[in-house]
Length: 401
Image (cartoon, rainbow, N blue to C red):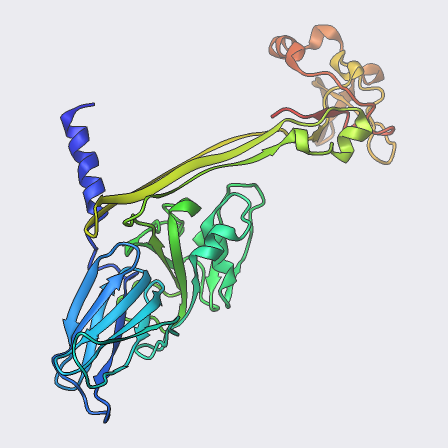
């Protein structure tokens, strides 16, 4: 491996530890710090710590006691507040979802700084700072809900007000944004963001990247009244937060298997005595994330492969043995009427028009066969079914993959 390739890979890994401060997946924690009388406490030190990565962010309350810790990656945090003359206060188990705001108000009690009051509880996320309507699809739903094809964007339809004009049935296919309507908005006007980076094609509004389920932390679907940073859309916004590493090594190894050995045969094949069509579907991969330098720099990687071999039962019509010999004396329409074969070289004038002559007995002589047709005819497959008793159509079934 060349030194240039190594340098690029190293740069990609190091970037995992650098927060993208412009991305719209980040959340924030806000609130007021007050004393026992309810008066604001300015200058209090507020520290928010990501419990998975150990990364800390700190700020101070202002003269009104207000504080804000912005640009926090989705995850679980503990928040500590300290001020001389007061006991330290801590709230743990603060869960921030993608692009959310948690409001934590602290009322400090008098005492030494060495004393502390700790509370561990889930904090409800009150979106008091914006009026947008949204639904969050958290990591548990992303990982545990069954998905044929493992396309995380199929979970968009868990959000109220989302619908698709047309759904595709083949496993592994995705729902194009051009068919997706959010909150009654027109299709082809939605936006998808991966860690704040637009991921929609300019033509037909398609997904440009469909990440693996094992690489998605969570995402939100904004359906109405988006803030100014979510521009260039007349529909909705799908805001995806990708996974990143932490202080502990975590990984997955998976293979989702479907196989014809586990399937029953199709009705058409049973009726015609054909074997089961071949079907092999493997969606496999691995992911791993961990620390490069504890509490500072992390890595995360994911690979997913797809192998699919599908055989389907198709019913066709192919030339019968008589037709291959040029004999169309038994070729009839659905009503039983003979389908006449005219000689293109036997046309005579009749009044203002012309009259075509039939091939005698509705049989094309062998010496009239086109040379190309004669050479191609052996490559036509032969019937393997009796076909319709009147028309002879639907006389061939295929299970080819």
